[in-house]
Length: 84
Image (tube, rainbow, N blue to C red; front, top):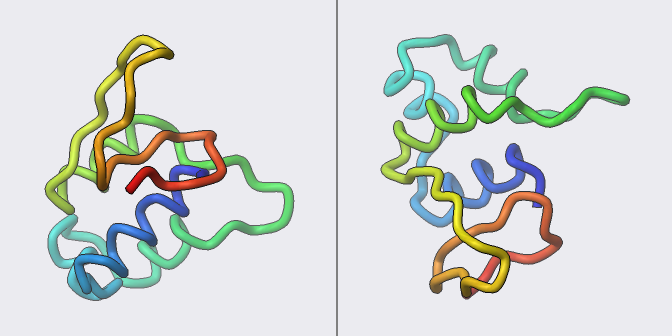
């Protein structure tokens, strides 16, 4: 999954609205929308921004060796499916 897809999935699962995430990050809802919606040709969000957004949702970024299994409810950036 792309980073923005992971954020959207977590928000959906945890029932966090754009307005709530904006409040947690102290930004506008329009900024949240802009970060989460891929405009044609736009690259995925950078790791630094992903870290900030994940932290606001109660998640963190972890780097592990390739052969390490992803725990249930975990995500792998760049993979097509969520583990779980």
